[in-house]
Length: 254
Length: 249
Image (cartoon, rainbow over all chains, first blue to last red; front, top):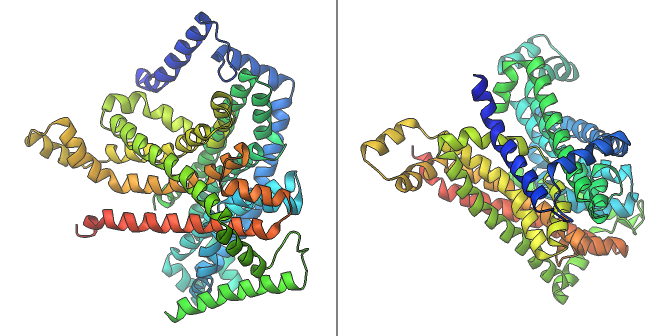
């Protein structure tokens, strides 16, 4: 069993080892590559002098603020469209016209309207997060067990009560799956905006390292961004399993 | 049909509202041009050919990167997916790399290749390859085992198994992956154009924003939206075509 578990680790370890050896033996001098040991050293140094922790805070702050705003808007619209098929049909053309705009295309608009900083990044992240949330929560609401709706009618719940007491709890596992997806998108969009233009956070940090020709620091940022992305996804998967167990896995499958 | 018309009417209503807000100057025209001005800028851009060449530039980046990613992704995915050994040793590393925000590779690509077309193509292909490759691996792993038994009974060669059995049966997964990468390719094209100043819509919208030509800016954004829409429709049509055999099962 333990041997089975180490097999997937073999390839990355061998690759890193070979690369390290080659870099040492060839006395690698490069603007784009650095031996793994140097990358690790740069990562440790940047973690210790707080440049990476501060950049991480900035990126995550913008990503989560955008994620929160985008999720709330997407969820509200998704529930409204899921409950009322009339509203859904009426808004179809409008939604389908706005949705395909790549979020990053809004960057110049946000730039002239809001300038550099957190606000423009948050707006773009929020725009990107609205769509998966809207589409998936709409499906989630539509798939709520019809008998639950009959119960709510029998209990004469008002529409607001019906949404809060029946629809949201019943659709929650699927909504959480949508949220997990949006969280990944939020991080990607935040880093992308920072790399493209916004002088803030991890994306700006990695661009600066590249422009300073510090290949070790640049790759350290890359590794760190990977760790953050992986950690975020892992944490949300754990929360999902804890909170919803098998229900969430069923929700993810569809 | 009535719903469709009503839905268009609602959308037209929103455009009207946009026009009203712009006309009343509730938001400064520096930031928000009316739909009339955006449309005029769009038409002017096509008439002079400026916008046409930018559109072609973006489409080229997107198409070359995406096609390269599709070919490489399907080939690598088929290679890894059809071998049990590679699935055990390589696939987990790939899954580990998946949540990495792809745009983080841009600085590395700039360091290696400079601010060039090659850099843009590398980044777009690198970003677009993941969904396709992982979908192909998954599709190959999920082939009905009995089909392999049939292949063995028929004494088919390994290439024949890949092309006649595994690829067709993994096709739905592969196409879904290709659709996902289409969006990735468009986004990365825009980002690369912004960063490297390559001829394309990304560069156009950035220049328009810097010069506060908001009508041109909106024209560019509208075109980018249209690009996303049209490519996604084209992909749906291709999917329906290629998967027509599925519905008859």
